[in-house]
Image 1 (cartoon, one colour):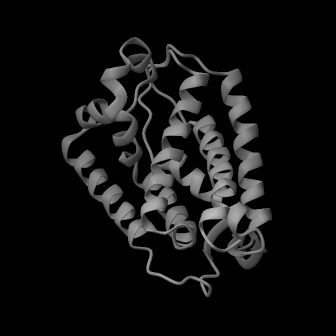
Image 2 (image 1 turned 135 degrees about the horizontal axis):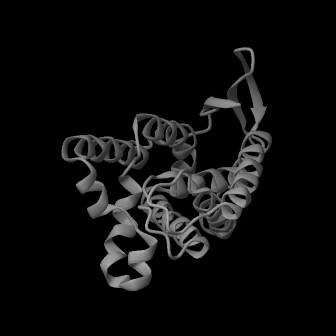
Length: 217
């Protein structure tokens, strides 16, 4: 299932923070293309470096959220942020939404670090923070419908519970498989599935905790 949009009829405000986050990610990616691998190595989060000298990687926990491994990585992340981020921003309000985004991004990074603390593979991408947005969306808008492209090219409107629930199950099973085959001495890697799982769970938890403070349920 490939999501292409959702129901925004209940949205009350322009999602400025979401648009700014998308713009920052695009600009940073263009800088990556211009400056090459050295830029990624400088600003990515590397678990092994964090384990050896935590202070040297504190800034990188944040900067790594705006780096990406390629055009498709960037496109996929920004598509999900564009579809689901605006509704969560509308519900939380702009300052709280920005804080939420960063906190779930940190939680995602730490979840991945807990699994492979000795890895020398640079971690990059907004996937963890966006997984947090998906988790919050599921809690806040469980009855919402998401337009998806299904096999055969048909467009269907499915409940968010099915679309995001399927996504989460896929991440869990993929993450378990990745753990079983992880080699911490490798210099290259694939998808940081446990960052997705950690971010999603953090988003759900924070989504539930925020309910008394955001007015609507």
